[in-house]
Image (cartoon, rainbow, N blue to C red; front, side, top):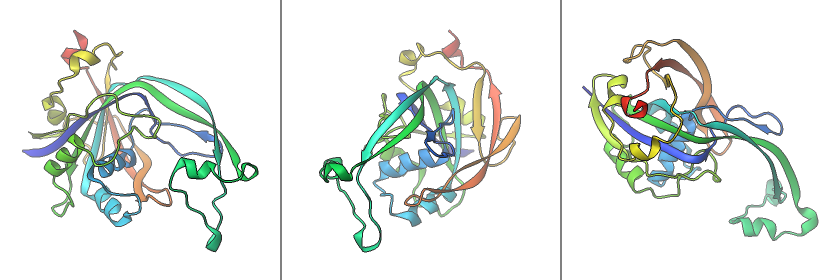
Length: 249
């Protein structure tokens, strides 16, 4: 038997960044590993500039996600005023949005972009340790997610959580059993969401983990540098299964 940490992610809007080119900011249909580990790091109180800790976490935990409700996509035409960042000795830092907008009006620039989101999507995330020297135990991650140090959001700051994560550690023989062992108290509230049928499951690591992989893709979402927004490629397996009985009733 092995330990797995499971928790729910739900909000009216979510964004799981894909490779962004130019003014278009797309989103995957399910959470990226970098977004989930960033959320966990925020719960632990780890800051973005603590790169050594982020890199250690990226190689210490396995990652999987079940898409309970895929939600619907929307696109926002986004405008934002930003001050000049400068460079070298003239590089500027701003502590708050108020400080950014306090510069002379003629110095403000405007960034235009199209940003994709997922509306009313629900996911079950699963993490497990893949090496003995993991920086935090699953029990420590569970405690942090239950009482996070920083505010958590679903990919972007404009996407807050709408329900508690309900983190829980279960023992199971494989990933599929772990997903089916989790119990979430808000399941009656979430039955109004259009459930996915069949349910999509994505995971990394061994192909045989309670599921038969339909295919394997490469996804660039393993964090290398939070400050530079650099990500490494990892392999992600995909399979489907029938929706849970409580969602079918």
